[in-house]
Length: 198
Image 1 (cartoon, rainbow, N blue to C red):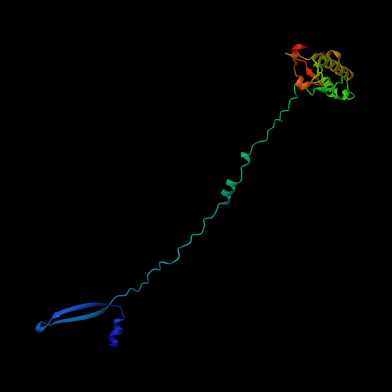
Image 2: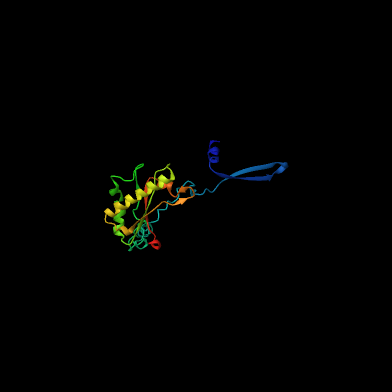
């Protein structure tokens, strides 16, 4: 029995043989034949896949794509930048006066920029428009303004500007108000005379 069990432990293929005997008896014979066992080991499903090494990088191509070409850089401009043009009226700012005053101790220094500009532009002429003080009667406004304009004219002549290049005119009227009184009250405008009016 032990020998039979040890033989069954091995892989076998059973063959069933059935035969009819005398007296109607049936004989059953089970024969066990050894099965063919493949000697080839099954391929392991968990075998590691082959790791491909990274492709070599072409350093010359990489540097060509990352380094900008000297030919693509913008060429420096050979022409110098255009100089900013001086305003048409030059540095002729209004000459300001203290309230009710028609002269000033600093008047000579105040007209110096206008005198310097006139000397540098000998073909130019100016017109002085005097303004009185704000919130005064129209007559007083015009009289004080004229007196201030004459004071500025004398200061320009003292700087060596020719008298023919400096004119004086009263402030213009707009209805019942003086034109530019809100902006120039208490000062003298120094306007460059247009070429057509010289």
